[in-house]
Structures are given as structure tokens and as C-alpha cells.
Image 1 (tube, rainbow, N blue to C red):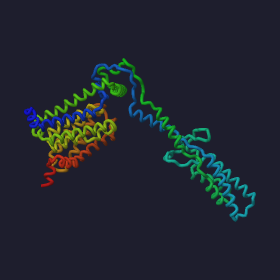
Image 2: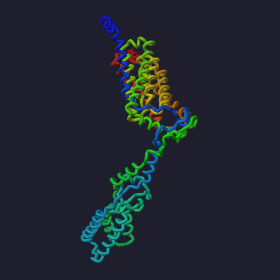
Image 3: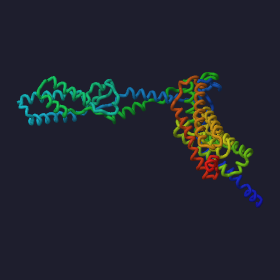
Image 4: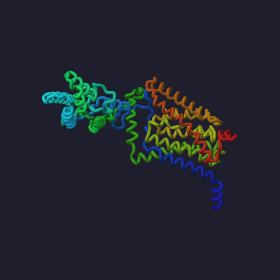
Length: 465
């Protein structure tokens, strides 16, 4: 018993390091997706390299995000917003015209008879009724930039009718029309009548936001995310057949349903076992590499913690992005990990740690091959270009080289997979540029690690000297 305790005491640090690796594996396994992985790898524009694929079950063909976006845009382009006539406002404005006319006529010095008063009042009310019957539409931001032919729907009482914007007055055109009619009358009291009519005209056609939003949401909800159905036993694709856009979408639909439906308790148990074995194997490779080739690094508890903390931290962040913001996958600064390891440990260990990390993440990343190839190539360039980080400018150069690598790999993939640059995305390039810029966050992390682990980098030594 004493011998066992003595050995435990003697190998305390080694046991602790092994436990750290066990904890790291447990955390990574815990956060890893529980869904099954589609066993076929395929690319648009490439021949199908597997055996003939038969549909294993009935499944729907899903539309692409682009198709759904186009259908939504088409619905919005054809959508007619609702506007509502308010007859109460019209009646109030008419009464205001009559009241204003009576008051202003009494205080004016025109000396006209009651007969003239009735004639002019009748003239003004006819103009008012004509304008208000046609309608004065209230401006709303939804009308910004819309021309006279813009289609709308009008609600008046219990009736709904189609119309277009040019059928209605706005405040300016209503006043201009009224002024024109008064000028045609050629009466000395034109100024008084203009004043009265301008004060009385009211906007009586209003945007019905509640009705419009409800109708628009109803139309958008009718857009189906599916475009067809594949039945069990149907031939999907043959060996050597080119994966065209139609076949690609069918295969992606099968992959989607396959990974979602294979979720029974027994299947999930085997999925967890498989995930665990793959992750254990990769961490074991890293462990043995450091143990046999860099015993000095393995003997340092601080460096072991630094490596695993950086590695597991990146994996946790990435899994969170995968689950919630898939479109931001390439915004994550994966190359920061090998940069930190190269600065604090050495370049060869940085390459192995980066390789293990992107292989683990590649299991679950969208389009695994592209993800792994892109991140591994960029990580190698980052390690080779950062050097010992003896100057701050080295990290800026690394950021630039990483972005250039991303760009070359992205364009190369487009040429290989699609044979053109038709699908080139500036938005995607923006994500890659953002990832390259975020490498500069290594500066504060380096200083934080120096405080945490008591390891001084070349950059700090040179600054102190």
C-alpha cells in the first residue's frame, strides 16, 4: 500500500495531466451534437463516387434558402397594402368648411348678398366633396419611392377594392386642384375661398397597418419550404452520375432528414459512443505526440493547461456558433489558436493542436471537406508567418497572409466545384475578412495568458529590453 501511495505521490503531476485530458475530452463530447452524420460526401458539379443511392425512406425535397428568399420577395413585390377610408373625418371636414365659411363671410368687408353667400358656399362644398370622394391619402413610409401605378387595396365600409396610388390626391395635389377650380370661377373672392378650402380639406385615406401586416404574414406563411416528395425505394443517383443542382438539392434534403430522424434512444447511444471514440482518438494522438517528442512541454503543467484551455475554449465557442448562427461559422478566428500555441509553446505543437481541433470541428461543420481544407491551410500559413512574434507588426502580417490564403482557397474551391465564379459571394468574403481581423485579438489574450501562466513571450521580452 505504501508503495502504491509513493508511486502516486511521485507521479502526481503526470496523473493530473492525464486527468486534464480526460476532462477536456468529456467537455468536448458533452457539447458535441447528438445527431447522426450523413455517411456520403458529395459536391455540386462532381460525379457521384459512391454506389447507386436508393431512397431509404420517404422524404421531402426542401427548397434552397435562395429559392425561399426569391418566393418571399415575389410575394412582397405583388403584395397590395391596405388603406382605409375614414368617412367620419370627411364629414367633420365638411362641417368645418361650412362653419369657417359662415364666420369668414360675416367678418369680411365684401358686402355681398346672401344669394352670393349661398352660391359660393355651394361651389366650395362641391369642390370639397369631389376631392374628398376621390380621397386624400395620408403619407406613410411604405409609400416612399412608389409611383402612381403602385397597387394598393382600399377598405371602405365592408367593401374592399383594388386601386393604385395615382387614383388619390395628396395634400399638395388636392390644394392645387381646389385652387385651379377657384381660379376658373374668376371671382373677386378667390383669396377667401382658397383660405377656406385649404383649411377644410383633410386626409381621409389612411394606411391600415394591422390589416396589412396580418395579410402579408398570412401570404408569407403559405410559402412551402418543400418542393416535392421522394418515395422509399426510388433511385436518387447512380455511380458516376454528375451531381447537378437538382440532384444536389435532393441529396441535401436526404441528408437533412437523415440527420434529424435518426434520433431514437438506441441510435443516439451509438452516436454518442462513436463521437466519444473519435474525439478520444484525436486527443490521444495529440497527447502521445507531446509526450514522446516534447517531454519538456508535457512535464510543464502550465503549458498543458494553456494548450487544453485554448483548444476547448475554441471548440465551445464554435459549437455555440454552429447551433445558433451557422452563417457566422467562417467569422470565427480559428487561426488564432495555432498563433497562440506557436507563441507560447512552439510551431510543431501548434500545427498538431490546430490539426486535431479542426478535425474535431470538421465532423460537425457544414460542408466538412471545405471547412477542414480552408481552416487547416490558413492555420499552417498563420504558424509559418507569425514567427516568434518579436514585433507587433508580425501579427498584422499574419492577419493579411491568412486572409489571402482564405481568398485563394475560396476561389479555388469555386473553380473546382462549379467551374466558374458565378456563385462568388462578397458577403462570404466579408466573413473571411472579419475572421482574419479578429486574429488581432491575440494581442490582449497573449498579455492575459502571460499574467495567468507566468510565461513571458519574445514580444514582452523585447519590449522590456
